[in-house]
Length: 58
Image (cartoon, rainbow, N blue to C red; front, top):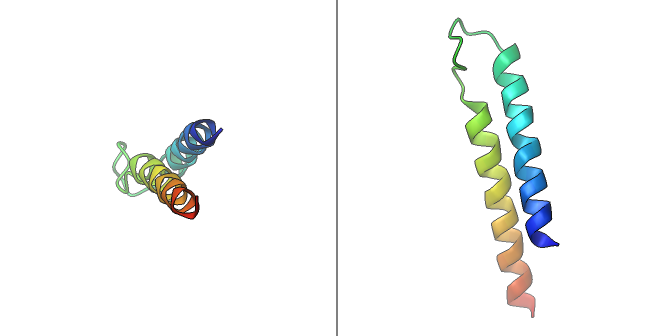
């Protein structure tokens, strides 16, 4: 169950970052902020930290 939540949240974060990169215009067509990379990394990091916290309770 934890793996599916991590995968779904990472994919959702990638789509949100892609949408944000496409709609925030800084003149660079490649996406100046690289939010499509930042958001999935943050989402996966949060999932990993949550899993570590849950495993310490057991």
